[in-house]
Length: 296
Image (tube, rainbow, N blue to C red; front, side, top):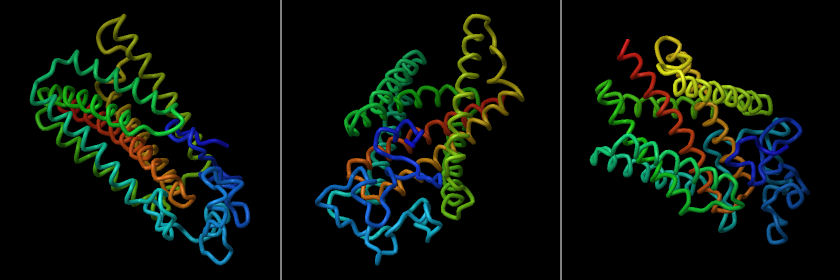
């Protein structure tokens, strides 16, 4: 079954029969080149497929030893294969672009209309990347730049409404990231088929509610259905943060499988893209919650 994460679903990620995510995880001993979409004749002797190697089989498929969730320490792979260092570097570049663009938008005091225009462009670029056969660094960085412009504009707006809210939201986002990473590595969070289906279903419902709320606000005026104000707005914001945290767990699992199954190094850009999407989601939800709390 393909991954339900739209960022990774076109990369060959799948879940095995036991419900755990993987790179079409038929990469059991003696079958690495059949189940692993990145396997080739050159890598037919994949060390992960050798019985003598502790990673010969997917530990999540057979209850074997842990790969240190969130920061898998797989044996050294052939040149050109994705590593955790690659993911960290690309994620730093992508988030750095977001931060620089946000700082520029804040300093230039760009109008709100420009910010929402940048958000639309970022959404289009993100969708294009999600459906491309291969990750495009230029496209991902362009997305990050436009997303940063949007975040800079709304952050300055919320700062006027609730002074200090952007910094509080940044700290909150960092706390959520650290908490999910710890929970993932200690197996408090287990990313299996049921978990993934629940997150996708909840996300669809959440987005539909937000679209309905926006439509009622546009045509009926006021706060629409009230999902973004008052006590109900806080509750909805908390649900949004929890969904963003769940997507972070999915991102960690996909990165772990990418390293373990020898994904090409270029896939680290896709991992950075997925992490950026999740972190931006969490930041904006926390920012809204803080603004509501300061106005009540």
